[in-house]
Length: 133
Image (cartoon, rainbow, N blue to C red; front, side, top):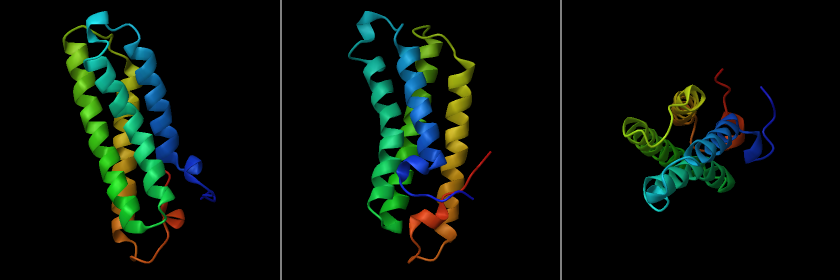
């Protein structure tokens, strides 16, 4: 397992950043009527995922890290719902890469949360990042 020096080394954060970039690209073509509606909601949800991973890690507390990972997972579920709605209403083209990123990030966050829940409370999060491939 690679050494985790900061939040940028976390696989969950890296995948979250990739997801956020994909959402920004995919939402570019949404109708102008959605500029301050579903488009901005999707982008905010997407940015929330890696942001909460970074914030939780940066607090250097297992309980804060876990709480922020759960918030990130909630934002991910929110984004998946918004993406599905936008695709169903033909506001956005379905993107297989984006669909895959949503599923991968959910799996990574779920595994990371489970791993941290099993770890003794005094453990620092650096030792608990896992690679889910």
